[in-house]
Length: 377
Image (cartoon, rainbow, N blue to C red; front, side, top):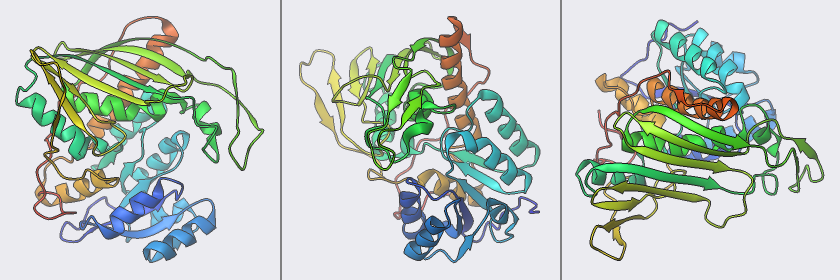
């Protein structure tokens, strides 16, 4: 069992648990771009995936079981890329083995799961971080700078929406999107909630309503075309978020709609409005409409990492070890985001306003990179 100590003079040695669809961009960035990370091993329930990933990206070790990843003394941090309902168990076992953990979103499928992991990491003196890290990209960071510098005056609120018709027409195995841990709030909500938090601050209360428009979904994508999936979760959610600052935001997430603009995101201020790029991306256009003007104008991106930079949060976690600062996609943030999302679902189920159980303060904004792939220390 590891003692949880990291050799801060070396790259952070990472082991992948899960080598599914999202792993490709992580492998690309962590092996080719971010210099404070070394991918030591990969592991997946489907051995061929691990072998193919290792061969493609030059990963030296393929482990047959996740227990082998946890027991490997050369691995310091476990990257948890399993399915949402598996996140808790994999992260718990990794922490109990003395490993640091960076998890794909969400941290868990319930607040209790997330809080238990947060407390376990803190008790054992281990690092915990997690996705999304898109808020660290050029788009959201440019918006944060504009808000912090007063370009739209005092922030009044925000309006966000993620609307689509679900994933069963294109995803190769979409059933889990409609099972416990799925649904548009826990699947796509993390991007919007985390971006809102980094722009407006911590959330105090939520009020929501939700429904399942369809009790079953028909998979039309291969290889499972024709399979009928029972819907276990809310698939159309509408929430009002009250922030500690007093600002209000509306957030809609839906797998039940036909709409040609999946992402919608605006922040409103006393002197103007900012059109925020899709928070599921790292870049995208930033536009401002100022009071007294009739036309939007584009703002150039002021920061790095406008392209798909997944793994940026983990690289920042590695760099933070050298300076002792907190990493940006830290346990406090991902737990507060989970608190927001599960409180929205709780509010909708119980038809009441829910006060959050956690309090959160914004962390450091990004700094311009001196060298691409190297985070500040």
